[in-house]
Length: 132
Image (cartoon, rainbow, N blue to C red; front, side):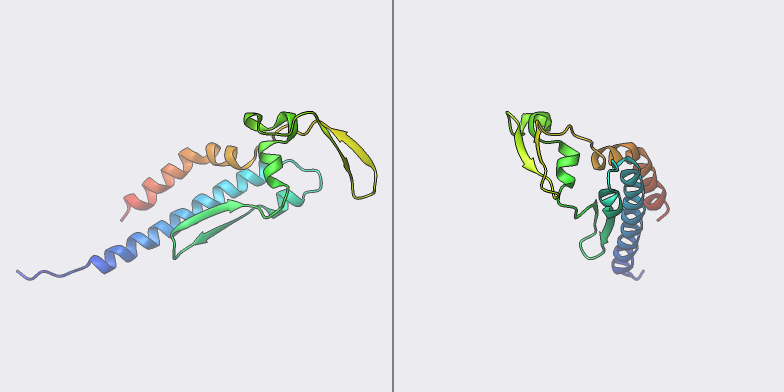
């Protein structure tokens, strides 16, 4: 009996399946995040994107909009876990008008997008990895 090493092919098959799963999972989460994102100017919603790093076998869904974290977690008196500034503050908008605020309540969109798709992501994994 002769031993034939197919470990390289097996590793490649697993890598390809992982990339496929990551891509499909990210697309699911991205779509849900876009649907859940609050819309004032549509800048945040339109910036939500996904990326799969095939070399690192990681997936990412997020945004590069600088205020996205404040939408997700809230600010000031309303920030999650009490981590915001207390007592309120004044700020000037781009037109030069001054406003007072206590902060804004969180309006999560990324974390709920993952949670709402968790079972679908798990089912995808079973489907993709179960077939190899």
